[in-house]
Length: 296
Image 1 (cartoon, rainbow, N blue to C red):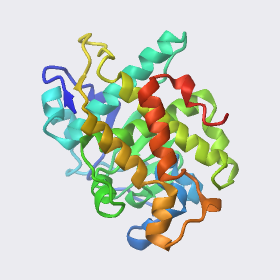
Image 2: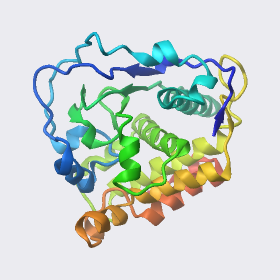
Image 3: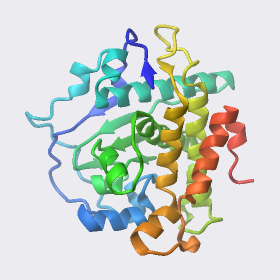
């Protein structure tokens, strides 16, 4: 996975509040085993902490002297993205949104930008307060993706994924798939509370996997709006394997087997490892969001 060294990064698409202090009420979900249980119950790669009834109404994080918004100072070019993890996330966000803006324009529509918020330990959102234990998520209330970079180590050590740069890119692209669903009105179908292999909750998650694959298909050909050249210049078969491995690692059956020792499809919220791999592959191989209709 390689970015154009000379391309400029748009840090306005990422809000860096790492090191900020969140005053007031505390999040309902904590770290450790409680956080892992939360993930197993279906928040993992979810669409906002309101699904767990997390506390809401907290103020915005208060910026302290240590919270410095590092990405604004250090993430200038594609060369930075090739050497720094946080800059890589900025570049992936830029690339994903470049694609969706172009795709919506091609279809005669207008894409609405969504920022990614990088935080440490816990944060507040329009969907409530959340800690890092919730995992990456998209909040439809404020149209933002929330991400603690420490999650990527958890993906390897706790969930057994091989990790790697494109595994990270897959996570980000999946969350932006939820943003696209929110714009299309599809995301609300996951909010009926039903679980199970045939539930709309699972279909929504699999569609977001497919949308991540669609972006990957076009990532090295979608021009950056400023330079006219693709921001992402190289994507290898090994990169795609990283993404497929990450998708499989967070399949409901893998998580259930790992944490409860048995698989219970009636409690699925995100789909099996095989399904997640299948739908990411469907998007990547076709490059066509119309082929991502998991509700048919």
